[in-house]
Amino acid sequence: MIITRERLSQARVLVVGDVMLDRYWYGSVDRISPEAPVPIVRITREEERNGGAANVAYNVVTLGAQASLLTVVGQDEASHKLEALLLGTGIRAHFGHDPDLKTTVKLRVIGRQQQLLRLDFENTPKTEILASQSAAFAELLPQHDSVLFSDYGKGGLAHVSDMIARARSAGKPILIDPKGSDYSRYRNATVITPNRVELQQVIGPWQDECDLQTKCHNLRQQLGLDAVLLTRSEEGMTLFDDQGQLHVSTQAREVFDVTGAGDTVIATMATLVAAGVSLRQSLPLANRAGGLVVGKFGTATVSYEELFA
Image 1 (cartoon, rainbow, N blue to C red):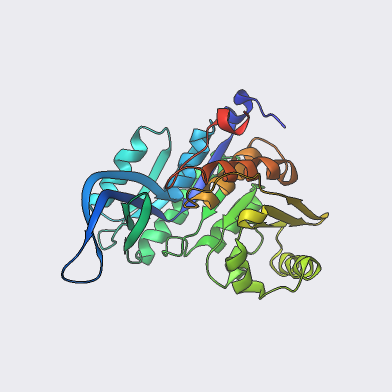
Image 2 (image 1 turned 120 degrees about the vertical axis):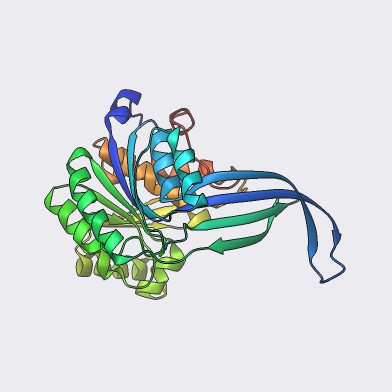
């Protein structure tokens, strides 16, 4: 299925969630430290990329659609760096600033083309800043065709239930990349996109495909969801909806790095849905996008040309 560039360029996606700055320190590893049995990495290059919900929004604009990003950051060096990175992308950023918040940074140390270490810097935002984001959400909502909540469990989506209710009553499709074991906060969303581990935390393990379908159907019923999209790494993806289930297999390719693949899948889906494509029609394209991005290093995106090549 080919969607024209013009059609995609009209699609407007509102991305709400936890942003982070992805830092990469690349270096050479020639020896082991005399102080402890660890490699010494001599850093030769540094790189910074949009992470979390910022990477999701970046995936939307890379496909050629329009994205707004609503989030909370600190008043620190990492937040300024994120704003600078977003500046040239075409993403409309709406940042709430919390002076007590440490903007989430994930620092990855890379040696010999593999990740040796990851350091995370983070804390949780204040409730009053989050409340002001709800007001901003209400203003932005009418200007968009779909809403994507990117939950990384960093505290930025404390009011997600209220936002879902507002989006639902406005008739907007709501896509959620979920976190944690309590999905009741996502009640009445259009679709949630957990991976295998995330779904097992909520519905428990399943014995076979029939058992999985029953459990996903029950989850949909309990939460008033239109669909559950299970991402299954090398096994592809399965969409569970009121028509039953639809599975797409992964296209065989070399997996270089799975970082951010889930971001690409949900961003592609939200973009296509915003352009008026159904979830079932979007599925093979979202699966293809995820397959393309795992062949790249770090948090990456897929262009319109790549997706429809």
